[in-house]
Image (tube, rainbow, N blue to C red; front, top):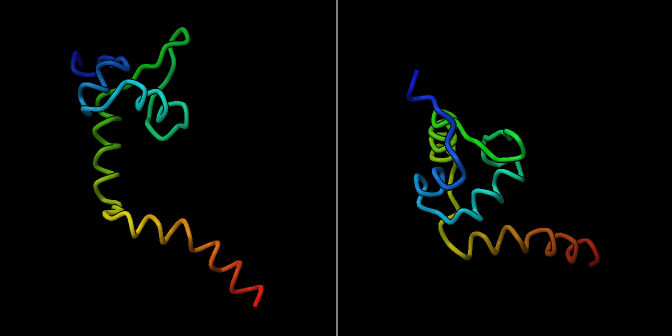
Length: 83
């Protein structure tokens, strides 16, 4: 099982083609599967690959208008209740 070594933040950032800060943020929020060893984040490649597949299966927000409608929906509901 040599393939199952623990990846560092830098390894995962390179693998996902994102900034290391993004990996730290996702790990801290527990949105990315990882664990700490001696206070340092580590990740299993199998867990990262599974996380990718799970995210691919979720519907994506493709447009800014979709994101904006989700953000403004609660505000609209509040204003509708006041009338």
